[in-house]
Amino acid sequence: MYIFVTNLYVSAVILALSTVIEAARPKFRDDYRYEKAFDAFYKLHTEPFDWYQARIRCESEGSQLLVPISLDEADSIPLLIAPILTRFEGVFVGVHDLYSERSFVTIEGYNTGLTLGTSTATPQRR
Image (tube, rainbow, N blue to C red; front, side):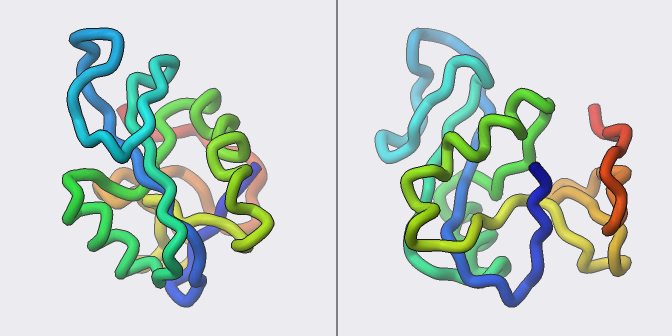
């Protein structure tokens, strides 16, 4: 599944924050869902925002837009967003092409190796 982000797309927001496992459920915010398999917290906002507002909202909560760090995590996105798919067309993720059209980077500035129209890529992150 590929999710492409445009800055005019109003939708739900999915957030993620990786943490270090210290207990069964590490401390973060109670309104985030912890997934042990990915050692990450997730939150799905259902208020409509554009990509920029969604990014600011995530950062104000001490988190960021979702940037999957593995294929398994990327494959789990449909399960995470299933509850809102009847009301929204999709979700925003932390990948964009704002600096160079059709060349996608993460919000941390890592090149994803993806270009629009390609079906595979070699991640260049981590």
